[in-house]
Image (cartoon, rainbow over all chains, first blue to last red; front, side, top):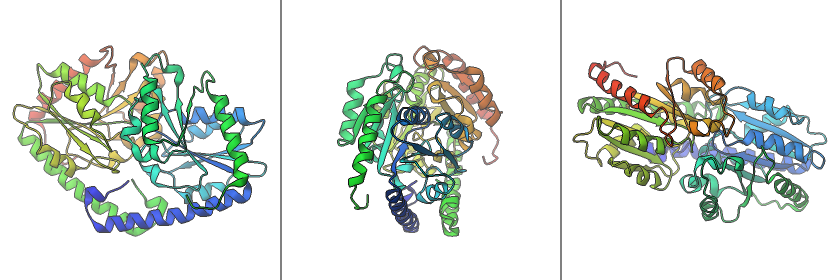
Length: 234
Length: 234
């Protein structure tokens, strides 16, 4: 989404800064709203096809006895993902962005008004599949969760540093395909740690259930810690 | 990359139009340059991790006896892909875009000056891994080639229509993983045909060699037809 280097025009830098400034303010408004409602909010980001939707559906199901979740999902087109996510039993709102390559705080704010938040304590936002642009847009979330599937290649964190640097948690997905695609576990973990040294890493398969328990424990701990959340902007 | 719907400001629309107008003019300049040099130019686009680099490396090797290729490759960071592509024996130039989510005609124009074009008759441009933004940027290419790996899910063409609508060819990659990930071939083909009815479709595996012969035949035909290429802008 950045055009500075390419177009080399000060005007573009200014417009971009204005957009991001406006987004950052609206993101803080969202953050206050979430805090007031006692909602833990996770922003899920990844390439298209890393398995965000399936992972979220299975995690929502597994968490249901402890935490009640709602989901906001962004795509350029179709409500396929919303339909899949509704199989979890959670309320789901689909945002279709048209040609916009990322979700913005304002879109999330509007979508919130279409969801019954009573009784919910977890809000999951599934961003547009894009490993570049959504990194620049704070949505007011508590945690950024970046997925990386074993089929994508171990060097993605090095090639897309802004996204991985912003991650609080990295979920390695589709571990069931690790052998079939010759996944190099040590290399992948080393690359993630190099770019995102503080991110918690989870090795998972939504198909076999691998790692889903550890993930759910992490989310429940984060929800408890949320009561002690501080007010510093992201 | 489009901010109209999100920010709702006329100013952004104007800046965006100016950027794209400028890019389109420089893309036509590239197109004229390519024509004068007798170069067939392919712009490869896909999600991160669909297998563009491996596919291109193997295709360049297979084509070598008939067509001599050069490669320009774009990434936010690292020259990992350039190193891999050099294993094919072809001259390779890496563009690192920093935070820019796509290649632009001007970047390609600058990269052209770092490559010895004598004796080359094929130029392959590997774009930044991103299924949204690069669709808006003409680079002066003859053909757009969109990759979709079997692990990404069959509905990607429906969820990312601008990219697939712009494709002249769609390469389904990683066919060797089709069984392991429960790939639904009929559904994938139907979805591609719905969004890109005129695109040629190739089912391939760079690992096993499946479909690489058909792809190379297609590229050689396109190079021959290039002699009869018309001058209408894209």
